[in-house]
Image (cartoon, rainbow, N blue to C red; front, side, top):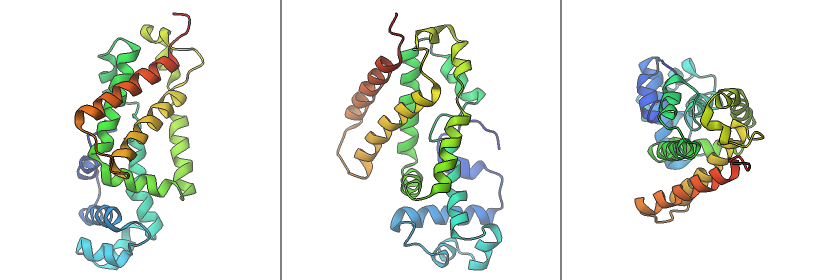
Length: 214
């Protein structure tokens, strides 16, 4: 499958090249994990939900841990911006640093909302899964495209000490906090209130990374 950003996890699952039975297993796993939690879900329950035999699960996955990693690892390609031509093409449409930050903040928050179930599974697992933690931080380090930024004239306005790692970690922490408030803590916020909060995040991030000499 192309590395282009897809709008949601379901779309990725539908487009990814894999056997149909494997796809059914992943779909069933998402449904059960999001409904009753990872620790409370057995491979037998997953097999039943998928309408397949338990033995077939182990044809595709070594064990439940392997199944879980196969389920949530693709989130790393989408929960934070993936540096592909498609994504950069959208960024190129904005010529000001603040507008680029705004695009990223709103785009990635929309991804979180559209993928509530898989994102919540990811957040739960990364708290206790060292392998996933290592993959997560390796992903961030490997996607530090600071040289790309420095080649763009409008990014001369960014503090030279700022790296993409620190920029996107700052953005991720802020939008994840809003996401958690609206999902896990069930804080009632209208679409307008969420957008207002996102605009506040944009301003906060921009003021933190802009060049103080400008």
